[in-house]
Image 1 (cartoon, rainbow, N blue to C red):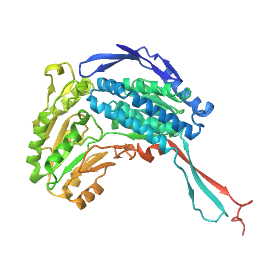
Image 2: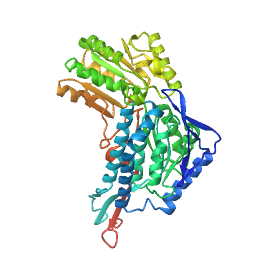
Image 3: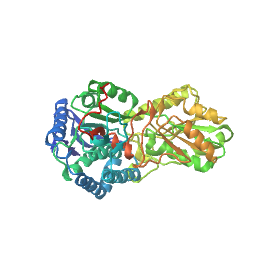
Image 4: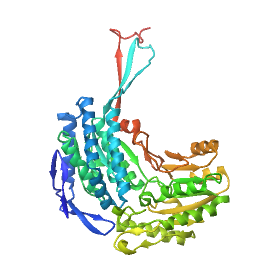
Length: 493
C-alpha cells in the first residue's frame, strides 16, 4: 500500500493531524493507499503560503500572460502523457468504469488547453459614458481575485478538480485545494504534475481533511478571497454562512433532482438509451443525473418496460474491466442509497427492477447496487424530491405539456433537465420554461469545457467552465480617465 503526502508551499509534507486516511477500492473493500490528514495548523500554513505567493512574491500573479498560458499547456501535455495511469488510479479509488475515468482525464486535458488559449484573447472593454463631468474615457480590466479555496466532491475527482484549478490558475490566482476525503489519489497525481510543471512556491497548495474542519476553516478564513465548492446543498449552505465573515466571493455547484421529459412523439428506443445514460452513468453518482423521468401517459408502459429490460441487462463488476456500472463510492453511501430504495417501497412506489445490493462473484466484497427503476411515483414522495445520488430512477406520468413543465419545476433544485420530442417548437417552449441551468434537447449528459455549467434555485450560485468559468476567478475593475485638466464645473451656478 502506497503512502502519500500533501503539498504546501512547494513542498511535499506529511499532515500533522495524527489521523491516517485510507483510500479504499470500492470494488473490493481493500485499502490501496494512505495519507495523514492535514490539521488546522497545516491548513493555515497553506493559506499563508497562498497569500504570500499572491500578495508578496507575486511571481505567478504578475507573470506575462503568454508565459502563464505556456505553463498551462505544459500541464495539459503532462496530464495527457499520464492519462492511462491517472485514469486507472481514479477507477480504483472512485469505482467508475475505466473508460469513464479515461474520458474524464481526457476532458481535463482539453480544459487546461481551453483556458490556456482563453487568457491569450482580449479581455476587458470600453464603456461609453455621458459628458456631465467633461470628456472621460472609461474602461474595464480583469484581475485575479487573490487566494482561492477550491473544494471538490468525490464523484468526478480529477475532472472537477481541473474545472476549478485550470481557470483559477489561468486568471493568476493562488489556490488552496481540498478534495473529498473519499477520493484523494488522482488529485495527488494532479499536484505532482503541477509541481513538476514549475509553478512558483505557494501558488498551488493541497490539503486533505474533513469538510467540517479543514473545509470550514477555508470558508471562514479572512485570508481567503474566494471559495468555490461542488457538493451537497447542505454543505454548500454551511460554506455560504461561513464565507459571510469577510463577504468573500463564492461559487457553489450543488445538488440536483433533474427532470427528463419524454413526449410520446419521440423515438422511444433512442429516448430509453439516453435515459439510461442520464441516470446510470457513473453509477448515478452525478449531480445532474436525470433521476426524475417524466413520461407522457400514452407511451409510459412501453417506455418503462424497455427501460427495465435494458437496466436488467447491465453488467456490474470490477471497474478496471469496463462493466456497464462499477460500485458506489463507499459502503456508507451504498447503505444510504439502499435506505432510499426501502423508503420508496414504503411510500408505495412500484419497484420495477433492481433495488438490491449485488454480491455475485467478484462483486461480493464491493459496494454494488443493481440499476433500479420505480414506477407510479408521485410528487409528494421523498424519492421524487430528494437527491439519492445513485442508480435509482423514478418515473412520473403526465398528460399535457403544461403538466410536464409543472412537474419538472416542482422541486427546490434547478441544476439540469432535458426534453425528448420530435416537435422542435415544443422542445424550445419546454426548455425555456424549465428552471434549470443546464438543459438538453433529445440527449442527456453531454458537457463541454467551452460552455457554462451551473444551476438555478438551491442547485447553486455562479458558473463553471466557459468564459463565465474564468470570470468566476476574476475581479472586474472600472477605470475612469479624465481627458481634461480640471472638472467640468458641475458645482458652479
